[in-house]
Amino acid sequence: MKYSVVIIGGGILGSAAAFFLGRSGKDVSVAVVEADSTYTHATSPQGAGGVRQQFSQPENIAMSTWSLAFYKRFEEEMAGVPDLPDLNFQEQGYLLVVSADGAKILRGNQALQELMGVKAELLDRDALRRRFPSILRDDIALGCYTPDDGWIDPHAGLWGFRRGAAHHGADYIDGRVTGIETTGGKATVVTLADGTVIAADMIINTAGPWVGEIARMTGADLPIVPMCRVQHFWKCAVETEKLPLVKDESGLFFRPEGAGFAGGRPSFEIEPGFVDDIYRGFFANYFEETVWPMLAALVPKFENLRLERSWFGHYAQNQLDGNMIIGPYSPGHDNIITAFGFSGHGIMHAPAVGRALSELVLHGSYQSIDLARLEYDRVRRNEPYAETGIK
Ligand SMILES: Cc1cc2nc3c(=O)[nH]c(=O)nc-3n(C[C@H](O)[C@H](O)[C@H](O)COP(=O)(O)OP(=O)(O)OC[C@H]3O[C@@H](n4cnc5c(N)ncnc54)[C@H](O)[C@@H]3O)c2cc1C
Image (tube, rainbow, N blue to C red):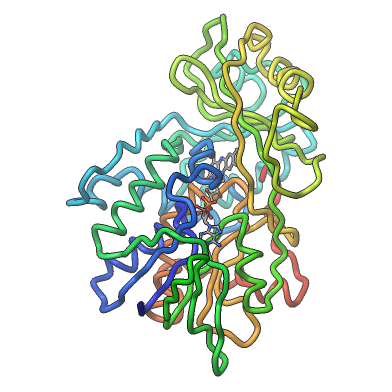
């Protein structure tokens, strides 16, 4: 078996890359090797699906703006794709809220976003209370509201890209990559657990929280750890106004979901590593003891809530600066590229990153958004390039 491009990991990022490669119309054969097509442990289906343009770095803002527009015209972009799932895009906006300490950074970020064409509105304490009267925590000094933002169904996003990629010719191969052979400074062959060998001109490592395992197969060491993130769905006995996705400086976030709300708070206190049971150990009472009190302080109506269910996934956490790493990374092997380290942003950036990966394969450089500052080189130089403010 031989392909121009072998993509390891068919989550939303790998599938987006396969989609853009296939849709380019260029003469490239693409295989996506996916270890578990039920995506039981993959990160993509577990996400909140939030798509926001509120960032501090121009690259992240540009990726969000383009991806947001792409998601809004998903059906047209995916024209002809059979069984396209409904993305269920909810254009209900994003609201970041900060205390006085975070106000300067929020203002600076809003100014850059506005400069880049994002509709981003600053709301002082009074304006905030008039617009969103349920949000009442005393220390909140400022909010930034981006009404064009919203959220998608992440499972539909993943399967939309996967079906789109298959429609444009990508072969999905069920299997676990266990080895990569290298010859003459190139990674040439991917080996699967069942003994299948696939020759490749180019390899894309989009194995999400497992990217580090794939990297070690060619002797590379990526600054990545899996971090367990839990989400919850609850119903509230008291009605609220129509709310956007709300997020504060502690990382606490929630958004409306059907007849209730989905959200949580990333647990920065836990040790990195894969977690397989959130009903034992650190997370056993996490909602009751940590998340619920924080939610009720932010929105007092949430004192009257009923937790319906919790679920979890793992961030591919970049230990250098929490930001994406894209491009070549394996010493001496320029034909392996990656995209990982999105923390909680991989769904919203999947269209732009999928396109960027396809540009690296087809042109050897970025053609749309210049992502050079987000490449692995900053790891070699030990120069973090981190988001400021709410991450
Ligand atoms: C609780 C939570 C909330 C989130 N909320 C948001 C949000 O609101 N907005 C947002 O943009 N992002 C959010 N995220 C982040 C987002 O979900 C991720 O950044 C994104 O899904 C990463 O996609 P991926 O394709 O890189 O990884 P994954 O979806 O994990 O895909 C990687 C795939 O690689 C496969 N694989 C691994 N090893 C191998 C191997 N050896 N061989 C073959 N295949 C292999 C796996 O089976 C998996 O399917 C959230 C994440 C979590 C956990």
